[in-house]
Length: 431
Image (cartoon, rainbow, N blue to C red):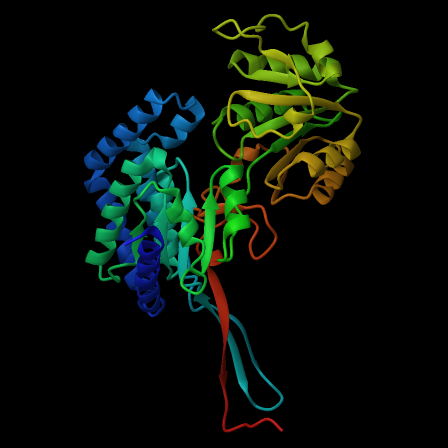
């Protein structure tokens, strides 16, 4: 059986499972989620052993530290995955919700209700936690899940998917409610994306290359989870201590996540006093500053942290390519701007529509920024690190959408539903 036939078989099995899932009750699906959480805990040793093999192989291949961090599982991260599944249990059932109900002038009773999308295929890279999050969110919303993880996390994903699928089956859900594509052959991904009519939606989670490939290749509708070229803009009215703390958190909390800050914009009028406390905090953690000419001239006097541990400079000249870069590493671009209008223009040109933040005390500047920046999440006086399904009260998330149809920002179970109209009559016919 070739790859295309294998993917079609998996998709047909998922389609059949989706029909049964669509008719399942909230209690049945919640019981499966509880069983899945407990199974993760019970199988932690085997899962962590599989993850250890993936991490060792990635390190031997010279994979950068930020990706290793995404790949790595430990007891706490595994427990967090189990807790995320249990949090889904407490969320409202997204299936069967009445969105609208009214009687038409002709006497027809019209009710619009939420229904599952059907078969959701999630294509992702080096983040094994996505296996549990995606499986849980799909089941919560009554959808069958096809999980296609990346080669770096192949052993981890297979171990996780087997544990989760068996737990769901043991709780009474259909046999093929959760399926994993375990081959590392990229042809399998392309074959999956051609199965329009069997797969209802593709959700890619990963780098710009993966997302672009899915959008351009897939015949199945795609929910585009974009890359995160996120900005922090420090306005002239900013509280400097607050600005330094927000920038440090947004950049340094975790380098390899899509909500990490990748560009720092600072009003030129305050740059001489704003840059020293901010840059010293970044440089003390080994972050390399890619500065425009004006910022470089000001920052070059900060020689206390001029080099990292290996002797490489922590201040370098930045250019146009830096404004476009999602580093996912201890690097940040730095540009001085004339004010809020230039900051908004820069962000809307170079940003990816993910998460953007202003640090300011001036309410007019804040309002202009919140209204003018085109992104899924726009912050005033807070770190972009909060763009996350769990932080937004959604439980585990399936992704962060940077498109405008049909969902935007962190999305979870409710976004994996559509609607249908139920119409009751008493024999009406249309003239």
